[in-house]
Length: 209
Image 1 (cartoon, rainbow, N blue to C red):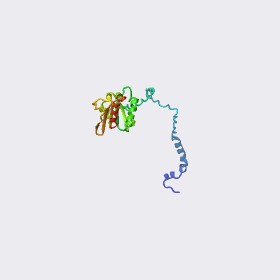
Image 2 (cartoon, helix red, strand yellow):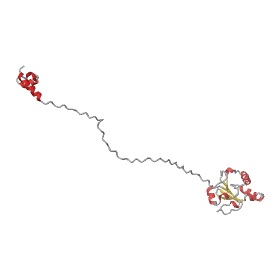
Image 3 (cartoon, helix red, strand yellow):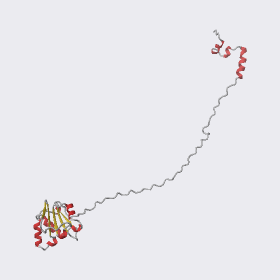
Image 4 (cartoon, rainbow, N blue to C red):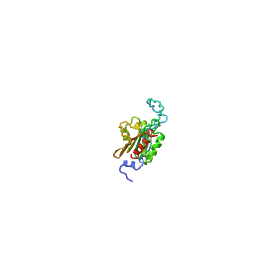
């Protein structure tokens, strides 16, 4: 092989091939004097031996928790429906109002009640049709208040003590009519018991009420 440029031999042959015999000792000395590179020593860092940095923690003032006090719920106030200011006996099915006055009874004396029911039963009225209102148990109630509450079609007033405030005394045993309403002012049962004339007068009028 012919090589015109001797430098090209370095890329084809090793160095010791094309060096002359008398040149090798020179190159050997030169290579021995060349400083060898210092080995790079990697220092192993022992992470476990490295002290952890001290971080100053902020001071926290911890307040002890107060015990929770359970407050019992207050019961809802119960609303009681007040009793009617107009207590009466009967069903008032036919708007028939009977005004009486009995201080010793809630409504009427039992004997008088039986006599009233027997009399009204003869003209087709039962306890379910009427309302017996004891005026003594409702002191201060005026006739206007009673009439506004009941709005009766028939009103029977038995005795002077059963006349409510605000009502002028009507004629005795005479039915008064106004439209579809009628009113009869008559004797009390105390006045009629043992008195046939009063009983007859009462009967003659009440059957037309």
